[in-house]
Length: 217
Ligand code: ADP
Ligand code: 5GP
Image 1 (spheres, rainbow, N blue to C red):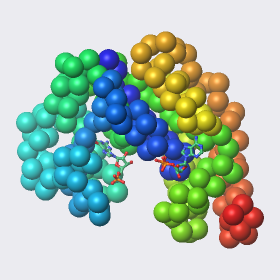
Image 2 (tube, rainbow, N blue to C red; image 1 turned 90 degrees about the vertical axis):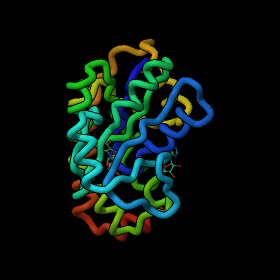
Image 3 (tube, protein in one colour; image 1 turned 180 degrees about the vertical axis):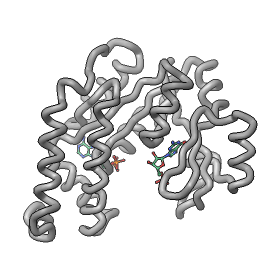
């Protein structure tokens, strides 16, 4: 069994891939984090997150119940050890959606953790996915692209870099990583792509952004 941390710039398809891995599967489970942030509409306690208040979160840290924890956007998030241990006991792979700080810490606590960074096929496709998903206004898309600049830098620290071109192909690679069939797919091979992606984002953010959005709609 493996613990798989999936990370990606927003809009790449991380949520889609994680759901496809876990839904209806007996082999893959999702790690349900604890957080101090309020639930969003439609989120359920114990399914999307364990929603807890600050003192309860502090008590979990104190008792050593979290395999890692971090502050993200002013709220606390952490991975319950118990979920990881229960999955290991059942021989299941665990999929984690945690930030880069958490990924670094988890690797120290649990060295067998596999860090998988997912890249979009191109920045143009990333933007069109963000727009088609329909959850972001154009200004928000620009803000997400700005965050992607930092996120892409972090890809260098990951063990595996996978391009989400076709969902099924990408899932097959991730399953191969989980069961050890796929070995070397480190960031070395895509360092040039990552640099080119960052340059492309800077160029797009620099130019008339609204025009670009209209062009690809
Ligand atoms: P993330 O969780 O990384 O922000 P999502 O999983 O929400 O991204 O995906 C962003 C959008 O792109 C969604 O509308 C999703 O259906 C679409 N998408 C994801 N993967 C692919 C793919 N391989 N090909 C085409 N569209 C995709
Ligand atoms: P959101 O509030 O949008 O669900 O998540 C915000 C951020 O917190 C995302 O980057 C997500 O990956 C990260 N996150 C969620 N759970 C955890 C966790 O248990 N640990 C850490 N370190 N980050 C988390």
